[in-house]
Amino acid sequence: MTDLSFLRLAVGPWSDAEATSIDCAIMERAANLSVVPYSGAWSDLGDWAAVWRETHTDGIAVAGDATAIDCQDVLLRSEVDGQSIVGIGLENIVAVAMPDAVLISHKDRAQDVKIAVQTLKDKGAKQAEVFPKDHRPWGWFESLATGDRFQVKRIVVNPGAALSLQSHHHRSEHWIVVQGTANVTVGNKVELVSENQSIYIPLGTRHRLENPGKLPMILIEVQTGAYLEEDDIIRHEDIYARA
Image 1 (cartoon, helix red, strand yellow):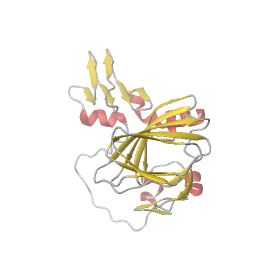
Image 2: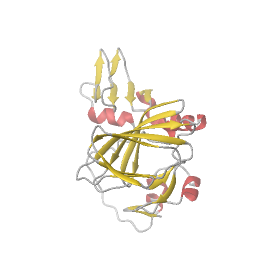
Image 3: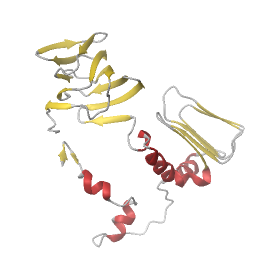
Image 4: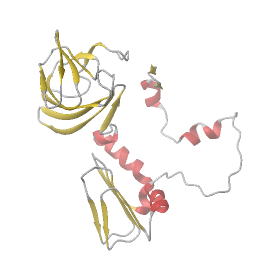
């Protein structure tokens, strides 16, 4: 299926494909390739131990808001703004803090991350299947907080982009614009909502969000309802031709 500049594979056959690397599945089997020898240093950075080898200074590799105290041969990495990771007295350890999970591993077991992913899948953990930042044709969103019957999201809409005209069976929404101006459709009413202004979308009401400006538009969305998953979206119109 063509989706803007992307070619999306059919979900059914793709989900049944064997989990293996592209070099084993395709490159080693292709008969129409040409190769040339390469004599320089090479690393595909295929695991966190490889990242440590390429980035460490005196055995310590840190990235983001990370601090190593009395550590040896460690990789400490924070991928979250405002979240510090501190290691004390560690040796041969990889610790990576992501927005939705933290990985801690012995450096010699760094390639076993795939075992952790499969274990999380078996548990039904979202972290194994879904990225915290969800990219869409119009921009992206991320979940900031979730609880019983509520969810808070940050939504970024690209200049000139628009979400689908949609409705929900199980949730209502509050939108608060924090940057830029939104052109908002709620039912039969269309209005501009500027920074520090908000608007309420009742359950079941058709609504659309557009960015008429030249800069990204950012808003905070507060959802409330009995069911808050992404499949509770009924699209009535969509400029990106999504079902």
